[in-house]
Image (tube, rainbow, N blue to C red; front, side, top):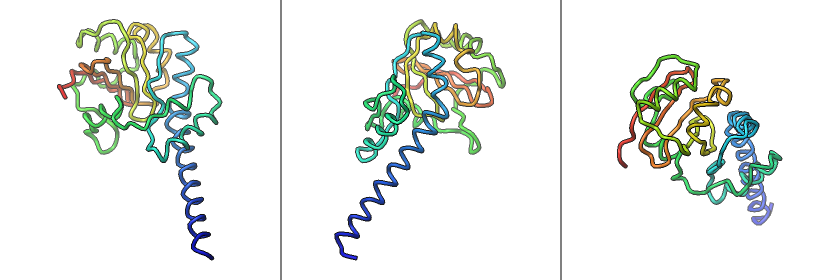
Length: 196
C-alpha cells in the first residue's frame, strides 16, 4: 500500500470515528435525555430560548451539526452547536464538581432529601434565594443543551415538564447569583454562587 493510500485510509477512519462519536453524543445528550422535555415545553406553549445544543471542537462541530440535522426537528438547528467550551453549563459544572463518586451531586445546602414535586421545590428554593420572574437557565449534567425558561412558567409547569425524574436538573439565573439542583434521586439543593 502506498503512503498516500495509507494517509487517505487513516483520514477516512478518523472521519468515521468523528461521525460515530457525534451521532452517539447527540443520541444520548439530546435525543434520549432532553428531547422529551423540549417537546413538552413546546406543547405547553411557554417561553423558551435555546442557547446551545452542545459543544464540539472545530473538528467535531461539522459532524455534530450533521447529527442535529439528522434528527429532523425543525426547531433544533445546526447553528446551535457551539465550539466555545466556556458556556453556562461548562462553567457551572466546573465550579460545582460532583461531591460523590457514584452520582452527580452539587455541593450546595440541602433543601429536601426526597421530593418529587418540582413546582413546590422550585417555589421553596425561590423563596430562599429571592428569585424573581424572568428568564433562567435550565440544563442538566446528563444532557448537553442549555436553554432559557421563564421562572414563572417553571413554577406553574415544572411538574408537567420534569415529571419523569430521570435527569439531574440545574436552574440558575442569567446573572449567575443563585443555583438550584435536583439529583436523579429527587434530592434538592440550592444556594448562592460565589463570585468568580
